[in-house]
Image (cartoon, rainbow, N blue to C red):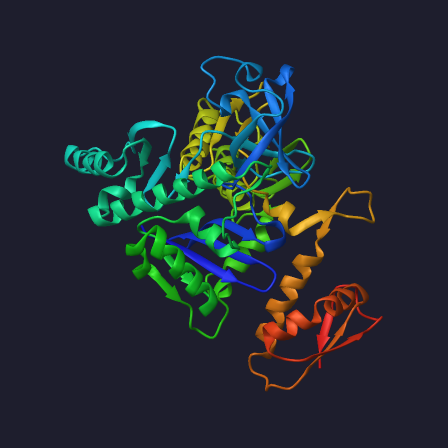
Length: 468
């Protein structure tokens, strides 16, 4: 079944949803103020060797630092202190965004991505997806590799077997050109700093999800041009899969994405079966509690507990990916007594996690019946993008950020004024929202092509508004 990527480019943020059929399987939100650094290149300078951790801190310039572990640099069994030293200049690539007090994670094993290929310029050889079994396909792609890429390694994605020779050559050329530009940057820059890539939220999202069979739908002409320009370089054949949304209703509303985002930000979910899930995120880990107090009927031959846990497992795996949860995840399933029940639940989870492109590892059940999972941290979680610790309750709960509220406001306003004439829009807003609207009034007016008349109404809640 073909995947569909929806891209909604807004004033303050660009949102994307990946659908498999009609099901939303992934979400990504990017903002210029907080754009993901994953994949970015830097000239860095080793600022400190941490012998106990076999790692190094790297100065990236502009008071930005990263963390480089020994296994993320070619070491041949040596320690970090044996292969580098303080003050040494290094070309590094970001593999994980910073989170809280943690610096970005760095690597010297560089990777470039296209729709069908992964190129590691310092690697060697060719690695095929296990699903490319036909000798004919392997021989064809190997011949292209040897002809058009003299050094480095390629990982061949499953979709490559359906790609034409011309498309694969275009992609190899695109990947080689990217590496050549980074090398030129490395040769002329001596101080720590970032490789000047022309990255936008939309192009970053495209790079994250691009595949040969991906259908792409965008909400604006500007986003369409950005995607078209990117695809021209990275995957020319995929341009035919790009379409502009031209229906009157909002793109995300039409595909029920707004509802999925709303659910992915809730602490408690109740499934159709009656099973409830509670998500408790702490600084150290995510705890998911499964409760079946309202479930009284088993599903088929399974017990109530097993039926409830299987339902929960499917939704938990779905939510972990939507929320982009990472690190240690503990799932407190309902206690089961049937022989092999734990194995059935584990197999259910593991089967879904295999489809997640972010590495997710099942550790197993503890003696207390707690399922242990770890998921690699890449970009920020949905929670950390949309919310921040509450300033009024010592950080014990979270609240929407000002940028999230502004983004929601602009989307709501666009829908409200669609049927109105071009006159000024009269807005009565609570104190906090009024403050933020006045700060960004000019840019919102330019975006909407309407003047705004903003009046504070002390009787309205802080972040509420009314339109006249």
